Length: 439
Ligand code: AMP
Image 1 (cartoon, rainbow, N blue to C red):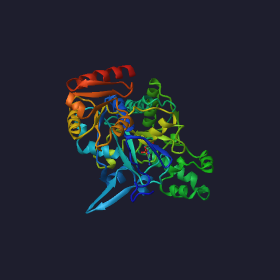
Image 2 (image 1 turned 120 degrees about the horizontal axis):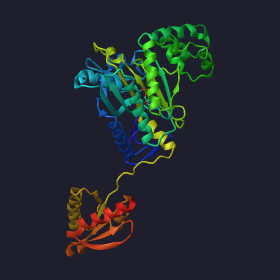
Image 3 (image 1 turned 90 degrees about the vertical axis):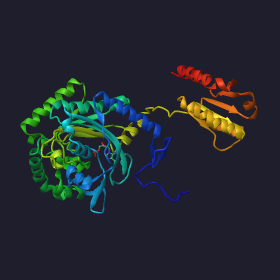
Image 4 (image 1 turned 180 degrees about the horizontal axis):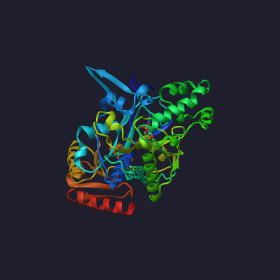
């Protein structure tokens, strides 16, 4: 039966346990916590610190930062007006991070800033597997250094993330986009080459020929791909300094043992990139094969109002795609923690005792749960079982009178009487022994 309201298509609820929706496995909240904490660990090993920016940003920031003619800005923004302000639900997090960097003068905090983020993004795309309207990105930005070692560091951090989840089977494509002049020169050369074939292009590509011909390089259309084989390549339009920078990035990646393929057609969909551009793919993702992408964006700061150029490099990755890749490879996550103790209480007085005792257990750092429905003993025991509690503590009128509870070890099935005064100590000791034998 359909309920009155459902989540908007292309958005998902993250529930305590995983479930399948629209043919996709939506992982549980404990899986998310596990992945997020592993991400934090990996980023922190690179000396990176977390930044959290608002989900709402000024539309102008995104439009100027990412570029008016990109797909994201021209047709995928959730933007609205309220009073005299234009808001957008952020479609990515790099421009917001750069805004925050400039706004808070983080450049004055010394050294390049190494920042990482994890959070929701929004794009009004046609939802399909791996492509959603609310999705989550994680990534990092190294801001304030033009050094090729910064580029290598960002790529190394990205690779370390996927390695930490046991995903080694990835493909890294690398390119250089050159400086601010290289791209416009190349854009015109590509336009001039494709113009005579305009009639053979798809409608989308024909439109891109006018607005943003570089995007045609991303085409999946076989006929267009063949056409592109004779097209000029960006590599031939790159300035000398960018070439040198690129050679150094490649050398450093070689030193780090990072394998990559050079792809002169890789341009990325966002306007702000200069020099290094890269994309990481997984063979397990089907049509939406990009796990992550990034590059150097030395022009972004000026684009959004900085007087000085601020050299920076970063990557952004999709959380949901990481989950999809992990699921395809049967990678496991940590289980969500189950109750240490489930209190089975019978009668009003025992219920009151359980409320108090459960809290005493929590104050000692244990997970304690009580029944809230006044059910029969059998039903409460069933609930303890369903919740995978380690112990059930059973208390009724007789136990209260005797000052002893019945303690059932749910794994071993053994049951014994324990005086109230010994309850915490006994359960803690048995729990520790249990955990030791599990590891
Ligand atoms: P982009 O900023 O477009 O390069 O996106 C960076 C990464 O975010 C991509 O490589 C994907 O993993 C992920 N991503 C982008 N758009 C979506 C979307 N609509 N749904 C899910 N993941 C996305």
